[in-house]
Picture (tube, rainbow over the protein chains, first blue to last red):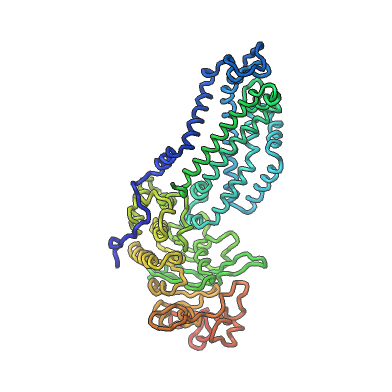
Length: 298
Length: 327
């Protein structure tokens, strides 16, 4: 009988610099990605602003300056004042808290429920898939804002309910995307191989399916943060979301658009704030996908 | 030697548009302890479905409709899905044809192998890691500690197949089903993998069911051979007899269509026609329309398996007068 020790191992094609641990490896890649660094830095600053808004804001966001209504940006009011004389900069700074909390919570709801439904549909298939996906199709047939509207109408208008509504309204689209991505994995060789070694269903879902859709998950989650900010704004606009005088970016934007020609600063600055934050989050999602996808090594 | 795996009358059907289609029809074979049994046949004759049926890994539209699979005298067909999970990987494991697609591209090698151990044995994380590194060394992978953290796409085909083998033997199974383990690899790597399988078999005291269409691999590896055609066993014999004195005309055809160094012939012979698909099976012998020796009876009645000399049995009317039948 031949001993294994005499076996001459074949050479690996790859040369290794040092044994890398996965986590530090990903962090290293992250630190080399300028795009990711800029986004993380920016979002970090936004968070800091949110946390320390009472210290940073020059005025109380609800304070009314009767003598300076619709005033253009000046030394006293850096970004001007709105139609009832509130300081736009202060409202923007306080708005970070409201806007980020609402959109992040909404996306968290979408993320967990949507991923769960998508993966279960893809993995189980059959009638479970059919029933769940038809329900999703029915929900998709309604524009998400109408759906959110209906949910808020049932729950009653408040910021928390708007958050829940926006989260639920995004689930169908999200679940469909995840299901589409995961369904190709079901028939792949490694799932069969995993079953052949006796893996449990939950392991296959967690360790075979989930890592394979992480890239898509990251990108869509960040995209949905943008959608959530805009949807919340829309709900607030029709009075079903943030209740005045709560400073919320979407509300500020929709209020400001009435004065677009007379007072451009009212809509412009909240709009810019939303755009930049959404951009940063999306870029970060893209960068994270590249980093966590082992095939796109640079 | 006691039998470790006994397959009796195994029949597997798939749902078709016009009712069920029988893909594997009344298969019988035995694997003895420590033996390598070859399962040979052309593409599409039901070899892979047989192996998937043994582990009950068939797709949802496939079903075992009859027969028994005894592993150590326990019938696996009556086991529940949960009980089967305890057997897969622990008692019987499987290596697949294509190592390129059988590894999860986004999971490091170490975690994929470690899963088998975590699933079947209650041991701590560090022990699992040690075992995985040991296994990687056992299957001849260099720098096992580094490969542990690598993703599959950075390994060559041969290395990936070694990883698959490590995964299959992680819990010391008594029975290994290798479904064309070398088909997707190039020739030099094939020899290495076969070598590795053979030494592991001796070292770990395993039995192997080797599924292949390559008679060269059979000659190299197997003790006994089962030849399958169109979902049926057509010949069972030991390897030496199979290669020296093939009985069934189909086996003869298979051997003649294998390149042979010493014969010096310029052209390979081939068996005319193709394996019939399950919905086109003939009424009589399923090989009759491709058989050079077909007789009248072959077209009308399906031949039983004739027992020839205790070791050999053959499903062909040519051997009708020689021995009594077994079925």
